[in-house]
Image (cartoon, rainbow, N blue to C red; front, side):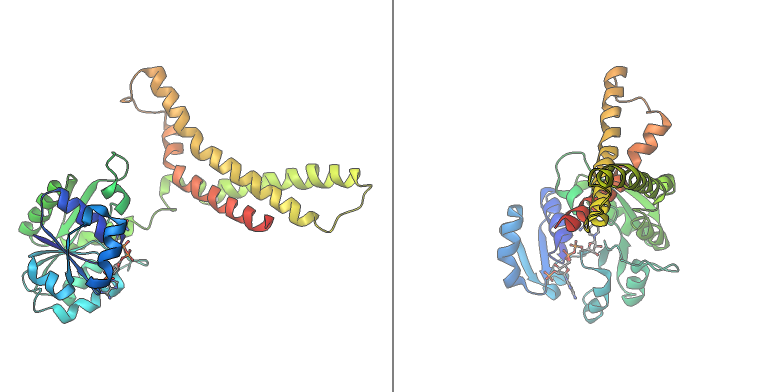
Length: 299
Ligand SMILES: NC(=O)c1ccc[n+]([C@@H]2O[C@H](COP(=O)([O-])OP(=O)(O)OC[C@H]3O[C@@H](n4cnc5c(N)ncnc54)[C@H](OP(=O)(O)O)[C@@H]3O)[C@@H](O)[C@H]2O)c1
């Protein structure tokens, strides 16, 4: 049996996957009575799962997933006696990872008699519950004890995931930092403002110089309406949203055409397309940002 502390998005996803892997799962919650109905409503696969108090969940298993935010790790100190010699899997991704240590190492220092292991933080609740191949299903495992790493590796494989041993708990620093690179991947420098700001400037110039100011201004007999700065700004935002979204979806279509033309999906794409494909998340986020701004200004 395996315990999962925390009944949030990730705790539930882990529990579903563990049950599918043949494990008996005990979910530890601060409010087991109150959470049952919610849990069964949002995750029907968890109907009938054992939901107990955190202390009981710790007692019931030797392997415990800690699916709570890292700022709550301190609260485990009160259970340190029951946690002696137990494997504690820290899945957290701190909002602001420390430059000198990791949340997993801090947890190990807090609970020196437990075996802390960093794992599962590089996958998402969505990837775990989604049956298709979308999403990262590779579990990176860091732990000081070789046997602990093997146990967690076997667990991950039973859950239908791939597992990679990263080494001692120190390697958790890299795993935690890796999750913070959403908008700073070195190969995506071009999207870090540069191209978007240039595109924004281009649309502003076009809209200001030509479409609104020149044409409307002339058309209105050279009278500037009080709304025009807002309108100009809003047109730029709309253009930006549409273009960023188009830039987000276009490379996927091009890639599909290339695969059809080549008759295989096992040939590498040209480098420019490869880079473009890797930027899609950032481009989509920029598109969403501009669309939200456009909606706000329109309102
Ligand atoms: N969501 C993801 O896709 C994902 C992916 C990778 C890693 N993670 C990591 O997984 C952890 C949980 O993420 P989440 O998305 O599931 O968060 P969440 O939806 O906010 O759930 C966190 C859960 O922690 C429990 N909790 C809150 N305060 C607590 C406390 N003081 N002591 C013990 N338990 C407490 C609560 O469950 P009860 O009310 O039942 O106690 C709460 O539902 C985070 O560290 C996150 O970085 C999440």
